[in-house]
Image (cartoon, rainbow, N blue to C red; front, side, top):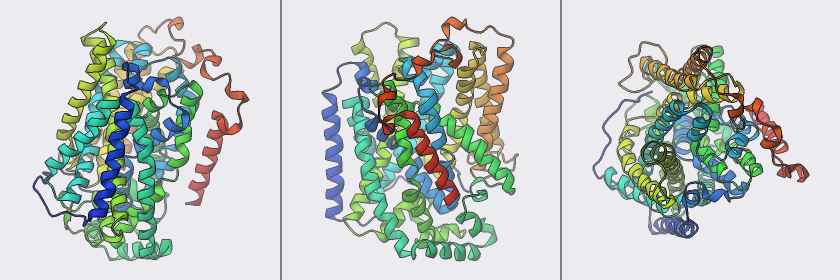
Length: 587
């Protein structure tokens, strides 16, 4: 696994994708729709709540699709297809273990607190529960994380533009950034959310044909198994390619984690990914929670992540499978996986991140190629828009209003939000260069999630269910957990590029699982220890913030019980849980 910070190619290059007029027309029509939605949403923006939270007016099906589309950016498309090419079937754990359970937990348990408290952001919830210290740590770390992750989406978005037109990467980055900036600045969160709904359908319509045609080229699932087995047997030892058995079976997942022991691999996946990283991401990441908070009722807010769970569980079939197909069908990917260093990728040297682009180049006819390009553009725009819209909310409300300029007019904070959007987009152009140095973008993303989400989840879950936890413990646990994750990452073997010291013999994405688990445990220990020697808040101040101090009727919609089962939170969650269990057993 190579993740060194190599210079990103900035010069013009030959277009990677041979598109024609039909493809350009399809891409152009997509952009017309995107900008049209931004202009239409602008008419509905009259105050800061409209801009940052869509006026809390959207139905559950819209926020549910936006919830999942906001995540269908670099993580899902390029990251998971890169994982599919490099590691194979164990990548499904990011969905069936590392997403669905946490999404159901968010809808059932945590959304009532977020929505019922009427907070405007996750850091604001932290302020009410723990006060200034934890709030400031959380707000700053979240803002930094969104700028870094927005850079990931922007780098991949720029790579598509470069591959399509052969432009220098810096030009492609600027053009891509301006497009996303335009519709968010115009329409705020509503523009982002309605575009995310459009983008969800575009993504599915573009990736499904790619998956079906690719599988047909390799002879179906059985042909893919045969070709992966043959490729693994041919690979030289120095290529460090996982065995075909490990790539074609989800458990114990050693190809993904890098552990020699199957038992340790399962523990890493279940605890490190399935509990710490997953719950940390899905339950405390404001990028996702913001979509549910834009709902028109507490019932819709609770159902938002549960509705999103249904399409989420089937996404692996259109992102992981194409990566696996590319690994045995695309010449450059075969060479890369065999230990070679082929050239011709989006940034010059071929990386696993190029798997989907190269497969599109090799198997899609014109017309479908334009649709697929639109799908990738939609994915990266959705991801970047989600990062930017969450950043501008936290920056405006949690940093600027609370610590820099208090008690100004609503119009003032609306202007600050739009300026923050512009600034974040410009900064993302520079953070995109960091993402460009990683062969597999998931290595970078999982490291970031371990730094920022894992300790936040520990603080949240302890503070929500233990009223004795104190404000001092809130910020002390966050700081200790984050520092411990950073320490493990930099001591691990090749976990964070050339900056890693290689003292701890951990490689693969298992290193990020261990870093996240360490952050969670350290945060809990420090929080408990500090709470025992400091003063907690009075119980009277914890209503709506701590489970034991909140009346149960405040956590549910009283009208929901009279609705059909498919419109109620708990039955929908049960159906989703059963379906994902079936998928786990089937594969």
